[in-house]
Amino acid sequence: MINALDGLLTFENIYLFANWGVVPFWLLLILMPNQNITKFFSHSIIAPLLLAVAYIFVVKQIILEGNTFEGFKLYLGLDGLDEMYTNESFRLVFWLHFLALSLFVGAWIARDGERHTVPKALLSPCIIITYFTGPFGIVIYWFVRIFYAKKINFNE
Image 1 (cartoon, rainbow, N blue to C red):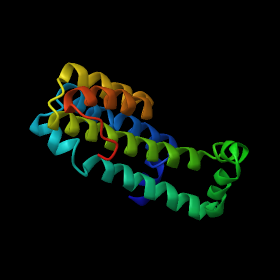
Image 2: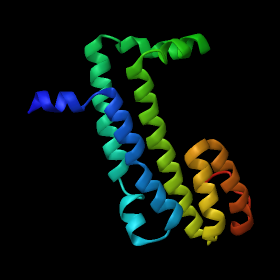
Image 3: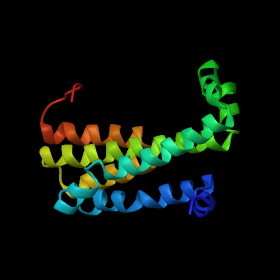
């Protein structure tokens, strides 16, 4: 049983499962941002928990490979970051990190948009842009939010 799982738990498969696995959560946020099904799945701990399990597995592999301290090279400059990305396990752990955080931000945008009654026609493009570009989507949403919240707030 364990050997069968080892064959499935390749970095490539984890990447594909994670990449395609977040799509339903994003589609719920984009198409039905305020529905109960979206609140249950996309606003809950379900997706981050699944991504965290994959993240922990990859980190365990990094430790078993003996590359534990390689991660600190990213703080030494762009060359260190570039060198880290040549390692498949580090690339995957960073990608899982990105998927979890961007989904969290997309869910926050959906909840905040509901709180400020931002129409779905404006909210959905912001969520789509966040899915593809992360920080740029947050900035666009923030400008939309200013109009609907009737105030500029840097602290929420």
